View: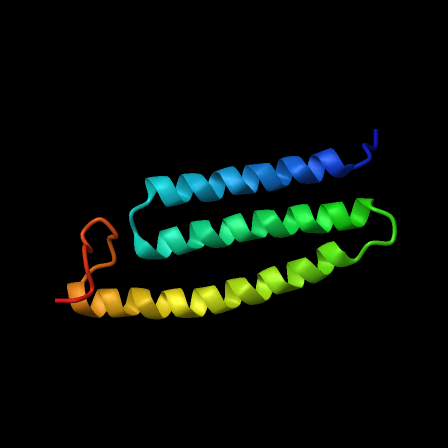
Length: 104
């Protein structure tokens, strides 16, 4: 039995990815894990934009927005990893609860 995959399925996937990303950000205190959770949230937004683009007639705006989200995620990852590296060099750890300020 073959099931057609519709818009609702993609939206549920996007919601699940968003919930996983938020859960990772809340539960994990590691700086890299928080960044990974943020990337998962951006992936959820991309899935939703692509789904809406796919199921609307002749609309490529969702695909264009997804390309911008991917570029934003790449730039965010580069800057955030540089900040995490700076935190690690200064505090000898990347636990976000232990880092109160970078200026000391």
